[in-house]
Image 1 (tube, rainbow, N blue to C red):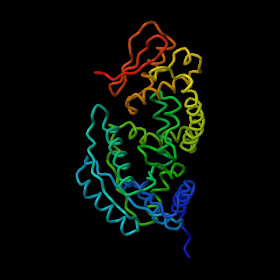
Image 2 (image 1 turned 90 degrees about the vertical axis):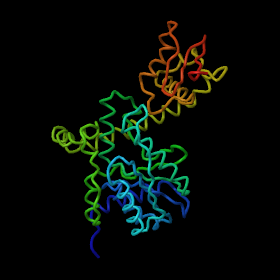
Image 3 (image 1 turned 30 degrees about the vertical axis):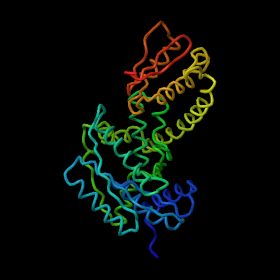
Image 4 (image 1 turned 180 degrees about the horizontal axis):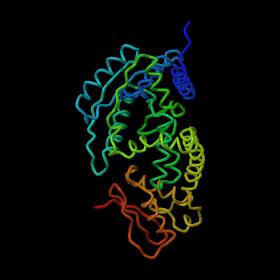
Length: 332
């Protein structure tokens, strides 16, 4: 028997371990989100191999953003390929990725996740697998650092996250991109090369092009170490989030507002987390809610001099009245 190629083994092991950690009931359906690129194609191929061997069913969903000529044909080809490796159901979803006040990357991402969540609910899938790799994680950490993000940004992408009522799972966060590329070659698969990945108009593309130089300067372990940083920060951030959730009822007052005097007694990491969750619960847009907004809300507590309400994405305003922070929507 021929030895299993190392890259195929690395991807297969990562998929198996990730699915086993989920502890899903036998017969559960998972969907692989597949663009046709090397990362998601290798993930889909190995999910097709692993899932039935551990008592699960695996299907595929591909998203057609309609941003490039021939995208619908590529989606159809992926669906046809999925059937040859036993991925069922296999569906293609067309989405509208037109920006509405946000950038093209954010618009495409939002449309993609909405479609993936809808596909999971439509098919009864209990999880959607995403093909982000170790390199993607390192790039995300660097982008967060350059943008002045806090721990939430530096923590980058979690392996498992529940969003829109669907569990999204990233089994390949410890697998380098070179191994997904090699695995596709070993399996005889021909990945699609997304031209956006090389488009200098996008910050991530520029960073990706610069990574070889960064590795040359800082050493071969830079990608692994950046991803490790994300895991370490994520563990701390998760604890702070739980502590903030526990503290929020103690600072909630009449009309569902937040009690300023109680908030002022909390350490800043807990206070700002409570302010963020308060803003999100009021309807502020998560994607556009940034540190500048949270700092302005915090100033209503720590630097109060009679300033007016803070305007937030989504048409939400939060202001101070006496010892309370209260929310309202613009126009109400």
